[in-house]
Image (cartoon, rainbow, N blue to C red; front, side):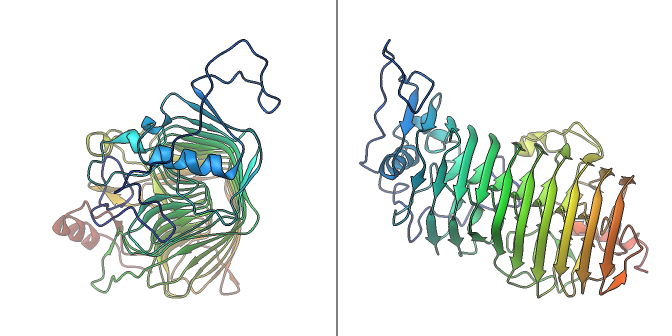
Length: 446
């Protein structure tokens, strides 16, 4: 992986810009639109829409224009990312015909500048934001209703979201949040939604390094764009055509629980990597518990690391191996995948590292990350994959306990719980010699 402290799971930022056909130019020309007004604390009665007294630390938003104004005030840095503030939605908001600006962005010239990233609490109070459309053919990092989240997003429903970011260097594309470094919970994505991106594309969030729980996705199609070329025989984590999932596109670190997803993942290019019903990547995540996916995965031109729950997952035996470089520390080895249930149909001719539940671990800093699968259920149909497993495509140093898998491969019962492959799925952090030597010690595929 080309991991940075700010963006992980292969989110290379060197080529990214911050403009799109519907994007604000705030990254280069600060917006002159003021933030929504706040009200000083008083002894007056609260408004009917909110049970909380509105203070200088509270921003109430009830119209599309107020939401757009607030988004621009975060993105241009004029309110310091709303740090210490609570945003309360007081009504459902329809964004049809609105030129959308994601709430928060990344300053690519100074990634330590958090003032343009959302840092407060965004509380939907059970309300819905609908009909958000955003299209970009320029490089962009962090796109969604909220682009960059360092705070908390909760109690929100998003409906009929259409986001398409087609540039090769576009990354962290989500229906609700682009990139999450905070917390997301009790968030739903419903209606007819299509989220398209090249790297880390997800329904609730494109990328994540923190906590995601109690979220739900339905009626959503994730499109993974771009092409990869592994003609030299090695399968190495890349920055193109990777990490697509219905809840999370790609996650590195954090935890996840009580999430439910139903929808479709379509990879349009050559040999995509990291596709899964809940997430494309759940790497270096301590635990994934009580999650359910009902997903169809289609990749007409091969692929690697594909699973009904997630494409790849697992933790390293050294918990702080990525602490200095990525700011991520794990506490469980192997990482725990527990009480998850998957119904999956995969049409993936020529794909490898395929499992009904999990595709594979990742060769990362000298070893393959490992997972422990406990009390999980898989019902699935796999078409065209190469030596897949009913539970996992590859599971070096991993443990599978008490799992019920009923999976077919090309119409016949798939009896192998773990697939067979002689190739590791590698992080790009590994040197060529190190990886090649390790591969040479593997047994040939059966």
